[in-house]
Amino acid sequence: MVLRMIDIRTDKNLSPDEIEYLLEAAFFALSRPMRVNEIAGILDQEERVVRSIVKKIRAKYKKNGFAFRLDEIATDVFMIRINEDLEDILKDILEGEDLFKFNQIEIDVLTHLVYQQPIRQNDLLKMIEKHKKKDITKAVDILKVEDYIFESKEKNAIILRTTNKFALEFGFSTEMKHLKQQLYWRLKRNA
Image (cartoon, rainbow, N blue to C red; front, top):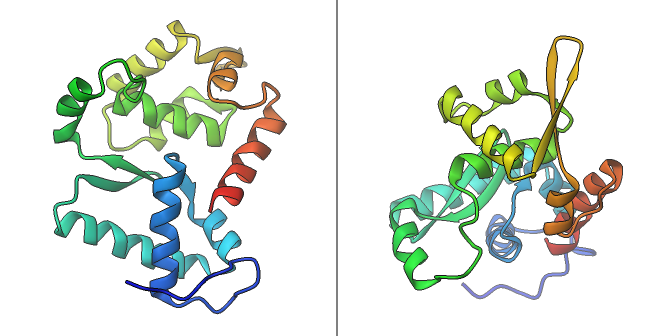
């Protein structure tokens, strides 16, 4: 598909095909989650329009048997990933690369946690519906041991947050307010 030159800073009349084109490029370039409301804000589009186009992209990838998929990893939060059947093959090809540091459940836990932190552990368990609670709990325990998340107790609840190690390893500030701003600006800058 050949599209006209697009400048999302000045062009507010994007066609659905142009939005789809930009979204696919952004998902590939970022390799990290993107929220519908953030995409809509960057492209100056309504959230319902962005949701509809994301749904179209997901259906296209599934129908055509692409090597990757566009997962909804939290409500209105999407990320491009390789298909699970290719992970073992790619692990062998990319031996030594850090692409598979976390399994799928650990990625889902970290993704939810980064966007929602601080969060009660029970709320996190409820939010991640596609995995069993015992598997999520195990992932949380592993991430605590690996020092990517820590817990504190407040009243009768366990509160989870990411650690300085997580922030430093992924190039974020160790201060929570700055980390959330950095997530926002990285998504905005790279869209």
